[in-house]
Image 1 (tube, rainbow, N blue to C red):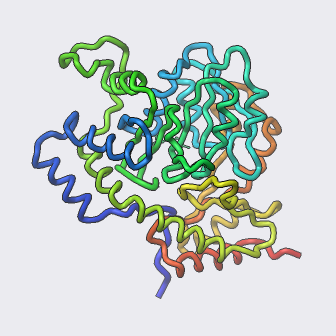
Image 2: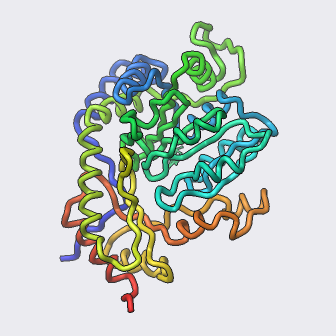
Amino acid sequence: MADEPIPLARPVLGPEEETRVLEVLRSGRLSLGPRVPEFEAAFARWLGAARASAVSSGTAGLHLALRAAGVSDGTEVVTSPFSFVASANVILYERARPVFADIDPRTLNLDPEAAAAAVTDRTAALLPVHIFGYPADLPAFERLGLPIVEDACEALGAAHADGSRVGARGHPAVFGFYANKQLTTGEGGMVTVGDAGVKERIDSERNQGRAHDMDWLDHDRLGFNYRLSDLACAVGLAQLERLDDLLAGRTRVADAYRAALSGIEGLDLPCPDTGGNRRGWFVFVVQLPRGSDRDAAVRGLAGHGIQSKPYLPAIHLMSFYRQRFGHREGEFPVCEDIAARSLALPFFPTMTELEVERVAVALRDALPVAT
Ligand SMILES: Cc1ncc(COP(=O)(O)O)c(C=O)c1O
């Protein structure tokens, strides 16, 4: 009998999610109802953040957070080229310019020194990304004295060296709830903020620019439809109840991968937690040995029914960014080397040790034998 296919990601949903969604359906309040503030409060409490605003996606949250940070036409935002494309796209939504700086080869996060060197008198904000759930060096970015928006879309459950959770430092920090994330609502996101005025602005702009005390169809600023529905928030509340277990499941799978993949010559694994920083496990991304054929590895894994994905490509080398800004190979060598060798392996909380072992064996098979 052929082995079962192993997908890249698999959400964990159960009867709790069904019950809560049914409650909302039966209540008739599908949007702008009580589940939204309930989910926001429960999320902020879990994280240790002062307050939170639910939004329709991580991208929507980043857009609103950048607007709240004062990013506007003609300004610049210093950010990482090693991220999902959304973190750069949102800068363009405000007709500002994404200014990339290279990444740290160990953590794969924006390098604070490179970021400092990229700051100009047009820099309106810094947008560090907690890539693959590893905390970016926020204390170093804070020393630059500029507004910060944190892309924490991949980092739910991560913690800084001082023990605070990623997203609880007071800067707008944005989480994503797409189906492969630590917590999912199908599509969705959350912006955590320290400042009550910033939350008020984000809440208004996600709802077409309507202040909370204004009548329906009255609007005092430009806004968007970036609302998260009560149905989605109901799923989020059920997911939040099981979040500690989901995160523990991901940590278990990561530990199993680390053991199963150790000893493969030239294969780089995600950096271990150091200095008190703690990763919130989202994906298990390895860098293949230099000189190996990544496409052949993807095909080799697929031959065993195992999904894998080159993840992530460098943003500045995507065709749109090359054409728009004239980026070329060689600008950010660390990012380019990492991006060219990165491969995401199947990773989800219910993955078994046997499945991890199958991936490890297939990956060894797919790599050239070191001579
Ligand atoms: C680093 C990063 N930023 C932003 C996003 C965008 O989130 P969403 O897909 O919810 O809009 C993602 C989602 O994959 C992400 O991984």
